[in-house]
Every structure is written in C-alpha cells, then in structure tokens.
Length: 400
Image (cartoon, rainbow, N blue to C red; front, side, top):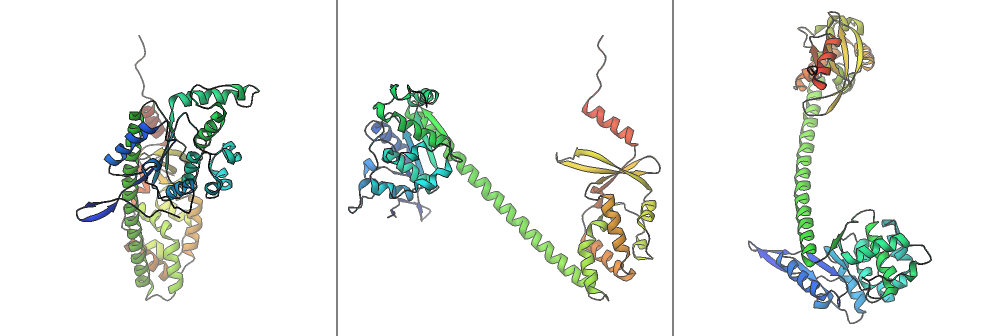
C-alpha cells in the first residue's frame, strides 16, 4: 500500500506538489537533530516524512514497520542519519516488502543482506529506497565513522568480536551498523556518505546537493532541448535532401542509379569541390582515371600526418597531399586517398549524363564551405614541421 498524500502550495494560482523527503534514523538518540532537520526541510518548501511526527500513514491492518516501508516507496528522496543506536529489528512482514536478493547486485559489500534477521527498520527503510531507486543522502556521526575504520582494520581477526566501540551504544549491534555503512559506501551508484558532527553539517551538505541537482536538471533540460532542435534541423535537411534528389533525378533516364549516386558520391564531390578548380566539366565528360584528377590538382604523393588540434581544440587526423612545387595540401583523413581512388573509379563507370545530374544535385545541396576539408599550405613539409616545433617548444636565448 502506497501513501498518496502530498503537501500542496500554490504558485500563481497553480497547485504544486512539494518534494517528499523521508527522514530515516533511530528516533530516541537523534530526536533533537530530527526535529531541527524537520524545520530545515520545511523552510526549503519541502515536505518531511517522519514516523515520530505521524507523517506516515499507519494502516491498522499492518505493522508500523510495514507502513514505514510503504511510505519510503512513495518518497522523492531519503535522508538517513546513522548514529550510535541500531534501533528495532524489522518484523518479517516488513522484510517481505523488500527484495533482498535483488539488492545484492547493487553493492560490492553484502554482509548486511546475509543476516536479514539482524536488519533494523531504519536500515530496511533505506534498502527499500535503494530497491525503488529513490535517491539516498547518507550521513554518519563522525565518532561512528572513526570506529568504523577500526572495525575495518580488524574485520576477520579473532579479536574483532571482542572490541568495544565507544560510539556504539550496544556492542552486539556494532557489526550490523558498520556493515550497513559498508553496503552504502560500496554501492555501484549513489554511494556518497557525509560525516557530520553537528546539524549544520547535514544542512550545508543537503543545500549543496539539492542545489547541484537542480542545476544539473536545468542543464540536462537545456541539452535535451538543443538535441531536439538538432534532430529537427537534421529532419528538415533530410527532407530537403530527399526533395532535391527527387527533383534532380526526375528527368533522367536512370533515376534509381542517379538517386543512389547522390547518396554514395557526396564525399567524393565534396573533396573535388574543395580544390576550387575553375572548371569541373571533366567530371561528366569522357571517363578519366584517378591519376588524371591528381595531375589537375598538381598532387604527386601522399603522407599521413599525426592528428593536430583545430581552433576548437578538437583532434583532427590529416593526410598531406604533396604537390609538385614542394608545398602540400592538408586534407581531412576521412578523404583517404585509397578510398577516394576507388570511389572515383566507380563514379567514372556511370554514364556521362547521370554523372552530370549527380554533380548538379550535390552542388546545389552542399552549401557549406569546402575549404575546411582541404587547406593549401604554401610551405614544404619540413618548413611546416619546423614552425610547428617552434610553436610547441619556443627557442630560448642561451644562458650566459
């Protein structure tokens, strides 16, 4: 049974449900902190859910432990405070509400789950939150955390059960408190634990965490909106591309071949256009080999070059297309010479009319500046490398 009660306040005439924050801890020893934390949560405009203030709906047909577990399932966040006391052991009906076997996969430390008869109601409330993926904000008394370190150092040793910890009220419960901490801190996600010495430590941590989550939510929402706009833009471009292809191939003899060519040879045409030649009629004249195109752009060889940072700080892998005059072109690695040679041969096997239609269609659609793909460097490779070296490692005057 879930509780469907929620606190409402009004903003510009609209009823808004406030954040339901379940506070889980032992009550007797932490009553002062719980009372102050309740006021803190209310001052932030949220709704605290605390068993000692009758915020939980106690079903007369159920044990109070079971009712508390049901309340956790309907919370938006859980704040757990771990102090010196273990609290009451969970009743079987409450344990039945939590899938302990499934929880074994969410933490690397599961000794707590193996001793289910020694799980307190506070611990079970948190386990229910973990099961339901409710965010958990865990706080541990500094003295308890200090003794926890001692427990970890001696765990598994013969003397481990003989050690008494000053921070733990009942020595026989120390192991179960410390293993609960282990379960939380070794979770795969949401495994943060904050030590506290006074209430202000808890309040400061919650303010920062909740403020940070709100900021992250806004950022993710903006990113989602931007992604939506990009998808819309791509959809529009796709529709334009489809319309352009249909318009381009409408009057051609080989409509299917032309349509496939427009899709396949976009990269090849981008590369050719990037050289900004005065005349491109050779593309749809008699077939010529790849080597003839290279002669037209004065390229005699190729060398691969390590990736460089562009103006945005992105790593760009390049190929140097070496010219006969000793200078070279920097060409994006996506225009691999071997791949482009194969694409060129395939393009030239198409009839002249279809090649002309493919080129015209792509020339109309591709409006971006092509020179970003191909850049002429009026230096020899050695001169360019030397300039790069000087930028990275500037020369210093010799010491006198």
